[in-house]
Image (cartoon, rainbow, N blue to C red):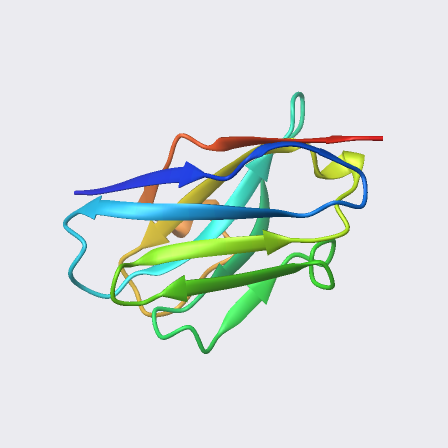
Length: 124
């Protein structure tokens, strides 16, 4: 089993930045592609970003492509999501995910583990 714990969320004004972190514990050896999803109240969960185990393949949602950077510390299986130029519509609970694969995915159902999430609130 792998446990994922997110941190770094909070309240920020529109145009601001946040850096989310996701640390892993438990069975952390092995190859895991990791990523981020978000869910706003009353809305469906949506893909934000993901990267491969090696970090050389990254996927971004169109809405975040120019404003977010996903990265990882491979040895620690820690993943980060740097978000800039935040907008009120980015307000959501952001959850870290991991899958037992070298390749990332845009589909939540293809991930094996996920965290409880961290709240990001962007005020206008």
